[in-house]
Image (cartoon, helix red, strand yellow):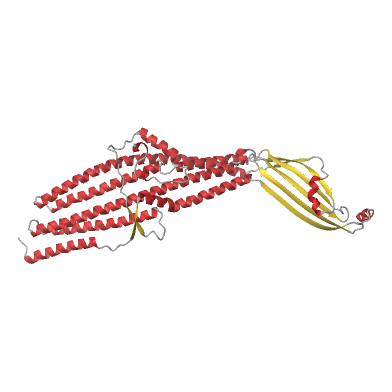
Length: 531
């Protein structure tokens, strides 16, 4: 049964409208953004320079180095000076007045002036002994006894030796050594953060490249759908296929257009994530980066080999190169350094001190002569010795500090061991991911080639009327799926390469203070696989 002329015209108009709608949706876009071309090397450099996490870790490193200087400050030489003057007006007793009458002086009040000047230095040695010289000069005058004024001096060298608490380099320098180890750990953690940010930037970059390829695949699928629609229209005009096939064609074009629109949105989102990863500022965040590099390929003819021996080699190198593991080890050493000092606080405080020096004397009215006292009328050597003891019987504070210090040692050890296990697992998984991705890339490429041949065959059969439209669309969908699978496998390989580099600690030198970026680190696997 043939359709009427009016029906045929309406069907043709409907198909033309569908095709025009598809072409219009492809040509028009309501999204316009600012763009900038970015290579992989550009993205990595930007991440290194602008990453907020890296800047925060750099600030933490400065802070920890400041803490080290504070801890070392207890061993700085300290210079001290003191100058004072006192004036007293003291009434004297009648007996004292009678005693002074013989000297021809009658005073009801004793007016005295006392000037004191003291200067010295003190330094705590790293074995706990404190040493330093002290010079004291005093001048006294009054209206009864020392009318002309008398100046005395005392020069001595003082030493304080701890006998129990606070004795020994291991105890005294514990805080300084712990602070230095913490600063070293922060340096390692900074480099680990740099590796993390570079890994994130490279991964975001490859996601943009993959999203761009997904959009290319979606556009190709949409183009093939439009071509199918045109071909079906021609065959309908020639009465070689049923006119109801226009419904399949219309639905197919609409679906592919929707997939292309979704791919466009996915690309915009991926580009925005890349802008965040490379540290774009608030004013630049709305400029969408355009990735210019292509994803890396496995260049060797064979599939990367994964053996227990090779995996063990990769893990061993990662253990010695991963900055976070090195940082955890430094934190463990830091907690160990503090433990002996905490246990030392349980002991009584017994300090022995002694001083050796001499005294001088000088009389005269000239005030400036006071400073000559250390060099006049010098007496024999003077010596003093003392013993100081203190001990809290309950020792609650010291016992609590010991418990905390020992707990921190155990905690640091557990964290370090757990991180070591995690690193080993990451390396093993990354190696398997690389090998698996290479295999899948090659397999999906073969699938794409086979799907293209199958589609060419179905196209020819459809023109000859040997199959139906649904068969053609099914085979074409298989090609689109194969292309997406190939792109996904290629992306998985690129991400696996970056992950393996990060897992094995080969992105940055863990001990370096300044870094240069080698782009090949993010495009080729590491170690033996490079050979």
